[in-house]
Every structure is written in structure tokens, then in C-alpha cells.
Length: 328
Image (cartoon, rainbow, N blue to C red; front, side, top):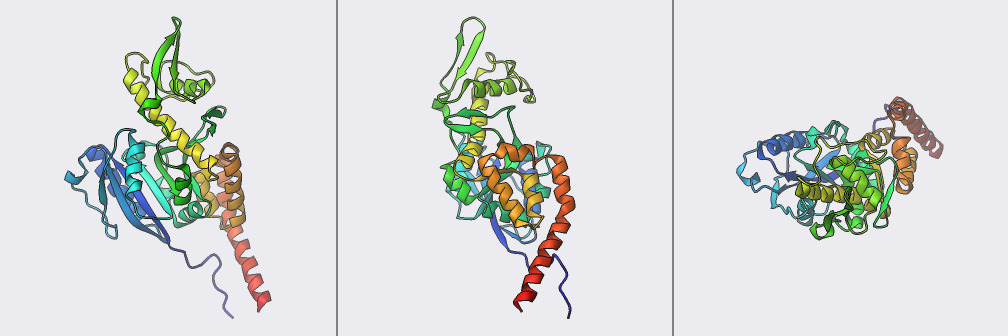
């Protein structure tokens, strides 16, 4: 009797779609071409729809060579009222139903993170099955609470995967629009404070420490350039809105019962073929995503999972084979 080779199984076909935010024509065309080449080459997965959200009114006039097997892209006129978030909302509002969506903007390649390399059919299956949102995670020194939501960690929204169930449960991609950012004022000579309804002072202090020349105690992360809160007030307000929308999206995913994980961890878990471990991690991330990020998401743990992955797959195959023999 010939036994089949271990680990080999018929792959499920995971269906997913792409919503791509187009802003700078030259950058966007190159980034989109590279991304689509990767997406159509994923074994066991099928890219079913591509929506290009045109936030600069240039996509239809910019020739891009798309790879074979790529579904015909649909260009949707963007909405800049809340920047990429309102643009993405327009895109998803016009989209057909699919179990998993990939959101990316034309700057995702500037982030030092192997997004495209980590995309596999198993990751897509994990996101769909666990009602998850995955991407590169960032975090504050300690979580903050704003608008009744625990904020930290959060996904960098330059590139993230999310199941349709998790996305629908959030109620939309825009949490903070222009009227929410009320004013920038002074309290005394040196005390300056930004006011956003429902957003805690510590939360805003962290954001301003990231963006501007106002230091935030215990938080050293910084944007690539420092804004002056008076000279660059309009830009400060725009960036604050974008950051709040980014962070509240992740917070609402968790509040609605979705799992929030780093893409590296989701990749490692999905490739162990140990569904119990993957499900446990997802369930834990629903309750405490920061714990999962700071324990399972550490590089050493990811390396251990990669080393154990063949052993766990062999064990799973052996157990499955043993059960089939007993049944016979």
C-alpha cells in the first residue's frame, strides 16, 4: 500500500478583492502593477475584483500594464473629505460581496515591511475563518481609551487584510470627520491643547508627540518630519484626523469581536496547519490584542513557530492518518 506524501493536500480556493487608493500617478501605477503581479500569482487563491479609488482624478489617464489573469479593474471616483478612509469607503460601497478584502494605498512600498511576500492562500483563509484584520501593528506605551474604545495596538492602514464580516461589524471606515476636530487653542501662555470630542488627553498627547514639536512623555515614535503646531496648523489637523481614523478602525474591529493580529504572526500561525493554535491566538487577540502582539508577535516566537511548523504539520497528518485507519 502506498501512503500519500505528508503535508500534501488539495488547496482550498480563497476568493478575495483589492481596493487600491490611487493618489500620485507615477508612484501609483508602479505600486499597483507590482502588487497585482503578486496577487494573481498566489497559489490556492483567486483575485476576483479590483477597485481603484481615484483620489487625484488621474487614474483613467495613466496607462498601466496589468498582468494576465487580473480581473478588469474598476475605477471609482474618490472622496477626499476624510482622505484615504472616505476614499476606501466609496470603493467598498461600490464593491461586490467577497469574503476578504485587501486595502492598500500607493505608498505601501515605502513602509519597511514585507507585505506582499506574506500574502498566501492560508493567510487569506485565516483572515476569513477568524473574522480577522491583519497588517503591520503599531502600539502606544500603554493603551488609551477614547470614545469608549481601547486604542492600541492598531493596523497601519497603508496595507491591510480584513474579512468582510469584521469590516461590516465596524460600521464603516470613517470614524472622525472634519467637524469632529473642533479647534486648536491655548490654555495660558505655554499650555496648548487640541480638542476632539470623546478623545482622551493622553491619546491626543501621544498623537501630537508623534507629529509635532510637542513632546509626549514615554512615547518616542516620530513622523518623518516634525510639524509646527502654529505654522502648520491645517496640516496638523488633517494628520490628526487620519491617525484617529486609522486607530479607531482597529479599535472598532476588536470591539465588534474581530481578531487583530500582525501579518507576520498570521502568516506563521496559518502555515503551522495547527488550527487549534491559530484559533487560540485569534481568540486571545479578540480579548487582548496587545498581549498577543507583545508575546506571540515577537521575532523569537515567530522563528520558533517557523521551526515547529513542519513538525506540527507532520503531527497533524499522522493523527489524521491514524484516525482514518481506525475508521477502516
